[in-house]
Length: 86
Image 1 (cartoon, rainbow, N blue to C red):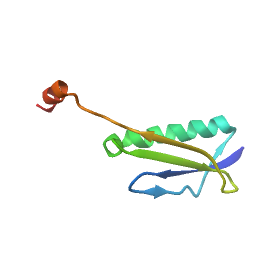
Image 2: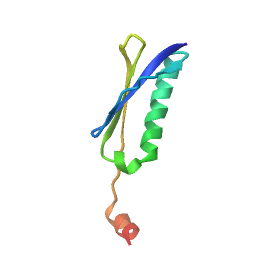
Image 3: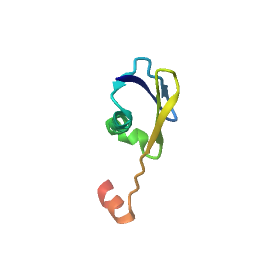
């Protein structure tokens, strides 16, 4: 298995993965990247509403091999927003 490094970025922070994760194949790399994006955004969804969260995956030679992003959007609609706020 090869080792890949998953770096995360949003408007407020940048986290560089120094440990890496072993992945069996390209599909495992993309699955891990997408799962991590969803998990991070799911832990604090209000932080990511209206923003983009990015992951850049590097191989052991420091080459970018995969990128993905997640952007959450949310909007109240007039009638629902008023009844939900009360």
